[in-house]
Length: 493
Image (cartoon, rainbow, N blue to C red; front, side, top):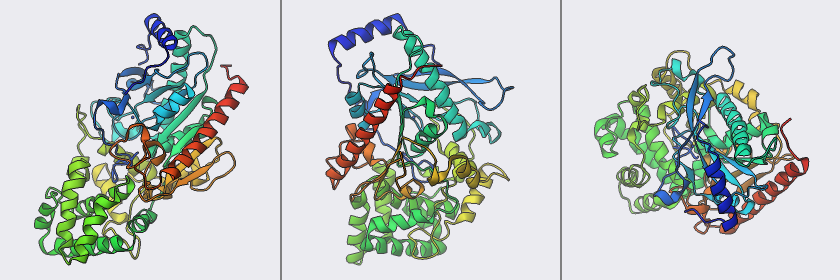
């Protein structure tokens, strides 16, 4: 919900908006398997703004011969902006449609610092589509590298347009970049590659390390679940594998997933259903009924099926088709399209994050292995499509990122934290928020992390003080780095 700014500020903004317009300017977290970032929305109050603006963007930033352009969607929120010297917060949208600026902890920070908030939708996702079909050939411009240049070009254009609105010449506001999950990685990488364009960045649950065989992911689920729940989950997996061999069709129907013809797709679906409880701060929804069923000698498969249908497919809202390779091969661009094919292309070409079963003591089925993922990439896209993990980590640095003024944050229960930077280094602090339901993006989203909690309220975290402590560290870092930018008197050269 928007909060009114001071009367003087509002009057000034009204005059500004009447005199000038940005109309000429032409979206961690993860839906587990396809998108790192799944954030449910409850209504209009979940957004600071949903007013769409458009920016004319370059299709290929790396070719002097390709002059094609496309319309990229963005949003701006000025209610808390202090026109005299307020900073600009660039909130990066990630691997899904960006339908507005979500009302999470960014609104608290914007109000505190008198900041404008702008948010650019990631190329290809949502309404920012360069093409009318998503054949593998047409996806060649979908990459983190192109997305970073999108952000840089947009940032420059927006700054110049803001100067026109404020009747200022050659002045540059202090910018700070925010992101969660994949967009958290983009936030860190943006500061790394364009340090002159931002005073710093917050990289929340930032998956900066591309990982080919991500066994730590499953291991963290076991740790987050605790001994009783982990055992129940492992027994459930073993029973599922047995029944899949004897009567797979009936078993898939029990879980509401009879359209998943490929057994690997079905087993991945079941693995993700467990993951989501810990990733987004709702462990009791899974572990409570499952442990109770085990202790009572009840059917664990039926109990897990109830959880999957009522919570994962029901209130959480995942579509079974997300796991269907037939669906992933659909190249049509429609108004209500999913982002599944798009994110899988990035997975299959850049970052992998292949969530495979460890060699022993795993929770997910051992059939969810590296071969399954590589076959998926080949089947959905074409022969020769595979993730260049080493190249990605060489280009960005992975966990050894050699940046500065980047804040890394992670939740203790989040399996994705093992692809993030979890150790502090000079000018790059890393904070771990520890509590029973601290998952993906807790610093920005509070608890649970989905559905959205307005302003990232931390009161439902099992340890609110743990969240508040890290948020205070974040505020102090932002304040310091913005003041250093201000002291430098940044201006266009």
